Length: 176
Image 1 (tube, rainbow, N blue to C red):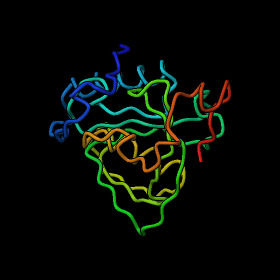
Image 2 (cartoon, helix red, strand yellow; image 1 turned 90 degrees about the vertical axis):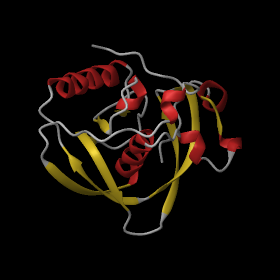
Image 3 (spheres, rainbow, N blue to C red; image 1 turned 90 degrees about the horizontal axis):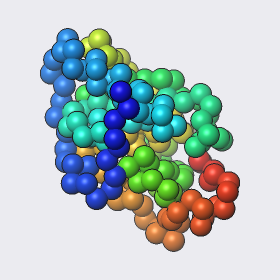
């Protein structure tokens, strides 16, 4: 089922989410299916449970070809539950970001270039990955939602924030 996506200004987007404790709960499987359908409907690169009003530490992400991110490299479809992020170094890079909860706007956000993430898949199996670039950006963006952080809160230069049409005309912004 496609669920409504909360928009910036809704206080639920500013809350810290609770960890998942029961991986066998059928409600978790329904949530994941709804998140996948909602993300696909909106051509998103990722979606966090808080964006659809569920205060659990659950994110999904992944893209092959996406009209909202035409220049972005592929990111494998991933369910990440109770994520833990670690950063091997301090190196950052800036990149354009958008968000289903901040529709029609884009901004330049500094993010760590590399990270290692660990967590659980839909069946409760633990896994880890080391990633960089756009993949690392997507993970950080989605996991920020679990801590009540929307990307504009990470921005340093609001002269590079605005409506897509005003900033870029009909063309989408570069992702990195």
